[in-house]
Length: 272
Ligand SMILES: Cc1cc2nc3c(=O)[nH]c(=O)nc-3n(C[C@H](O)[C@H](O)[C@H](O)COP(=O)(O)OP(=O)(O)OC[C@H]3O[C@@H](n4cnc5c(N)ncnc54)[C@H](O)[C@@H]3O)c2cc1C
Ligand SMILES: NC(=O)c1ccc[n+]([C@@H]2O[C@H](COP(=O)([O-])OP(=O)(O)OC[C@H]3O[C@@H](n4cnc5c(N)ncnc54)[C@H](OP(=O)(O)O)[C@@H]3O)[C@@H](O)[C@H]2O)c1
Image (cartoon, rainbow, N blue to C red; front, side):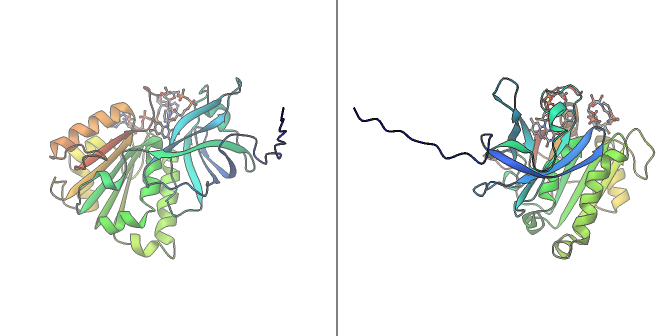
């Protein structure tokens, strides 16, 4: 009987689909972002999400959906994350450091992609909390500015410090020697808070319905012929903002049937 002995070469990576953490930034005691190496073969459309995680105590991967926050031209991948105190994944993930490994399943999917929208003049990115993550990718993608003359990023959080990741990202984008030019005059950033004093306040739903955002930015009100929208927030936010968009005449689309707006949940559940 022939017996073949195969000696496996030692694996450099200990986790399946392992990627290495290169940078971690803590923005508040409940928000952080991190960058990891990018699998060479990973192609994705800005706005899509992947499953990432850590090895669980039971030896099985503990995975959660995460929007890719970096643009598709970036050689690394960036994520923006909540820290849920007793969350199975984020109670541990919040402690990662450069050099650590995470699991990343390289199968990007999602509805927040430019292909799911009909052509238009202006696109609205509407996000609460960590829902800004897919737009951190889309705002840095040249295709967004090729397809639309104007891009409005509305981001609402309870407090000012929770807006900081988005504020810094837009500032860096505008000042970037290469991309800055593409964005100039096209990207309009409208951050608001709801529970702390700030120069602009109020829920996205209210600021659209009462017309405050159009007045503050000096732009025309939303209309179904020219405007497209992408929505990412809590279930309650998504539901309410959809009603507002429908009120302006926009209809929900999908990858298979592009229309005037698309929606994705920023998380499952009612909140922490
Ligand atoms: C399509 C999709 C994309 C997602 N993208 C991101 C992302 O880019 N960044 C991110 O931080 N999370 C994202 N999430 C949520 C993420 O999948 C996990 O739920 C989150 O990492 C918490 O994991 P956990 O195991 O610690 O707790 P879980 O058991 O997953 O969640 C515990 C509870 O915490 C609350 N919660 C979970 N995530 C959030 C959040 N982001 N903001 C506020 N409350 C939350 C929910 O009420 C949930 O019931 C996404 C979810 C979906 C469905
Ligand atoms: N943010 C914090 O400081 C904090 C701290 C500890 C725990 N938590 C918990 O974490 C969970 C998630 O909190 P979060 O702040 O990330 O998300 P969130 O509660 O969804 O709030 C994020 C932003 O969205 C607004 N919003 C919520 N529902 C909306 C709706 N239906 N229509 C329009 N706007 C809406 C909020 O305005 P309003 O303020 O008007 O609701 C807030 O500005 C919650 O369960 C919360 O209790 C939050």
